[in-house]
Image 1: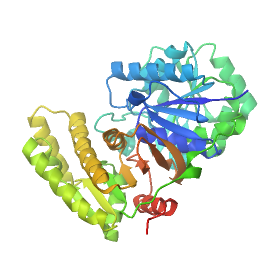
Image 2 (image 1 turned 180 degrees about the vertical axis):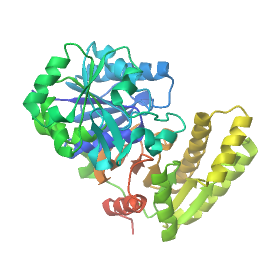
Image 3 (image 1 turned 120 degrees about the horizontal axis):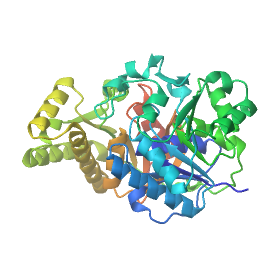
Image 4 (image 1 turned 180 degrees about the horizontal axis):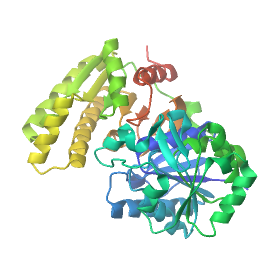
Length: 431
């Protein structure tokens, strides 16, 4: 049987993260924005809808995922995947419920482990680089602080459906034993979270899940799924790239995570031109306009000379504190403050890209990536090549642009430099 995989992802970088996992099997993978795509085409093996719903209200995220799932059902998908954050940040239970409701299904298998990125699940307890989730950096997430590590408890608090875990000892008895256990539990439970510690464990889980209609969780298992199902070849647009750009590469960072901070510091230490946006100016229209003009003009000077440029929100702790204080004094919550800063970065990016015709762009931060893409009128992208685990390059849909969209918490300290080098390598600068 010919398979078509439909994915609903709750943010832009996550959509590309799972996209590159599927693309390793030589599948053609397409990411589309939920708001811009009421009609989908069968021009890829894997169609991913980015609902950008991680920071939405419960009601709105449910509506988006329900409608996105219906769109994929209309397309004729045979396998469905609800892609979430690999540490369960977001409206997890609500979005899982929305997909099952849309499909009129009552069971899904969930795999949250991402061993290559340090996420492991053992006995239902999730760790990040050896630390309990509740002791990791995600405990301090400003919007979705993760204060416990037991995945069953986290999910059960967000859904009326019944949740269960299958521990690692069952997984390591092999796919057949695991499959039998899944079939046994689905008679009583709706969500089955399965342990994994290694990529080999994920391979067993993927094999055991062959024939199961709804999967959910992090992207890592998507590297294994195509090994056990049939996907017909579809021509990939990467074979017909037409990118010729003498401008420098533009890097835009709106993330305040430790990983992204190390990555921007690495670029700065290399001497790459860096322009820091003062986030304290975003609350006053006049100050904001002056700041946008300053950053835009400085960036333009470098880009037109063929020099790479980093534009970043100020991640100095004192500036971040002052920004939040100004916002709170104006009765603006942390989420809205973050979105306001992302919007300013997006406006500057659009101005630079439009003026220069720039065709190579790197964005760090999930919310920032989504905001920038919408500002540029990009309705999605084809997934090209993996640069580092979970982070691919892409060919934009709606604009002739090579893009790299990076989750704030992903990537080595050298990642942003690797992304610049990668975009230079796969494009052909004009002479």
